[in-house]
Amino acid sequence: MLNEQQKYNIENILKSCLRDKFQHYKPESKVMPFHTRLLGNDRMALFSFIQSLNTSFGTAIFEPVAVALAQINFEVVERQKVVGAEISRDALALIDNIMRELKAAIRHPSRDNEIAAIRKVAQQGKMIRIKPTKADLYLKVKNGDLYFFDIKSAKPNKGEFEGFKRTLLEWTAVCLGENPEANIYSKIAIPYNPYEPEPYARRTMAGMLDLSKELIVAEEFWNFLGCGNVYNDLLDCFKRVGIELKQETDDYFARFNR
Image (cartoon, rainbow, N blue to C red; front, side, top):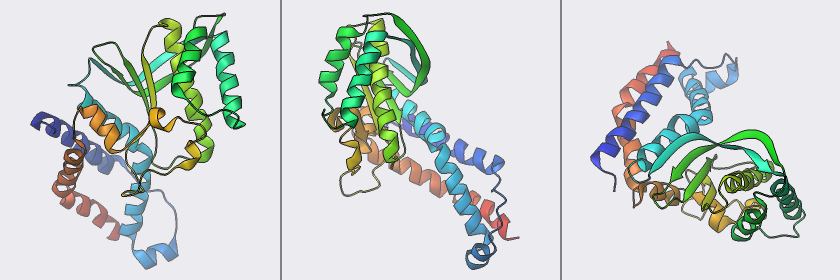
């Protein structure tokens, strides 16, 4: 369960995000005469607002909420962590080969096997500078284990999966290049399950990600950060803020009907 301080911190994050959005957001000036006459200016403004909020939900809400949950449970918690900028030539060649075989479906994703293979070559060959990549969320456990999360939308496009996989492999290679003995866990995090109560279904991920070890979804993600059963408490925080700010929200969108 969340303690009172965590609830307070999370709810303040949500209120600050929404109030900032109300203060600075301006709907796109699209003329949609049929839509507005049928549905009303306020509903069209709400539709535009939600679309805009969705694009920033990860950085404006999910990331700071994740930090608020994790900071009392992990030794180090950082947002937008630069993983590194150098990778060995041999590790890069290995990753290229893994990606080719996965795309050709002649290899099944196996996080354990891939890490073992990368560990052997992580310090072999010339070190090559690459464009630094950032993890949305970085955690370090007291025993030294490292966790890197790339927080994605609930329904990523099929064409994005290859990039996800390469990023996870490169994070592993960069870290093992610095410390070949490190224990690294890199994962794609999906904040909620849009298919609930059915299991998360994005079958096209199966050929690229090791779903049991490289994908973490909804309750599993938030409960991991909170080191306990905190998911329902977290949803309650969102609900309380929604109720508290209901009048402010109604007043904001009522302006568009004047």
